[in-house]
Length: 242
Image 1: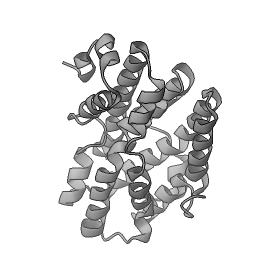
Image 2: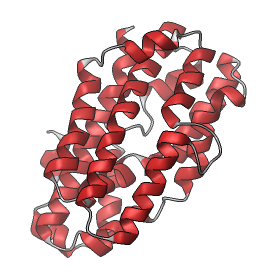
Image 3: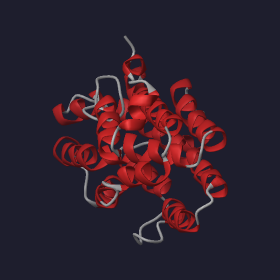
């Protein structure tokens, strides 16, 4: 049975408290085959069994995704009617594109620096094509940005992905230091996200509490977040093709 087959009916989702709904979604996104939680590549990094060619492919396709999803954050901004949320989105997008708030660099650029430390040809990465797994998750961000209420993709990002970042990226940083001789400077992409996303822990609950107010809206948040998690898992799983 697929994960989405286990979803409660929308009437039941509508009766949950925001915290109950977010906890349910996080539980779904923690299942095997979902998201980044306890992903096989993280376990293999910790074991030191991921090969350098596999890390090259993983980093390349992850870079292509994060660099190409950013325009759809802009689409969410355009469709959001709340000035305070739009202001937050502008700040987040500025950080993603320039590193202005963390005084670092654009987040895709930081990931390229990590790739360079692994010995990748970064010019080749920038010119590379997304593989099907990468295109599917990036295209899904486009779909959510244009075809769903603005709070749906924000919930999918915040609950389905960002809430798992601190634990997952902490494990990646430790594994890269211990097994691949990476330095703190080479790991900035990962370490700065640990700090940044620790501050987002309650944002998913706030998003659901303030904006996903109907059973239909709750159902969209549930379905899109779980699907985003599934597609993201496939993106990270691409390392096995190397």
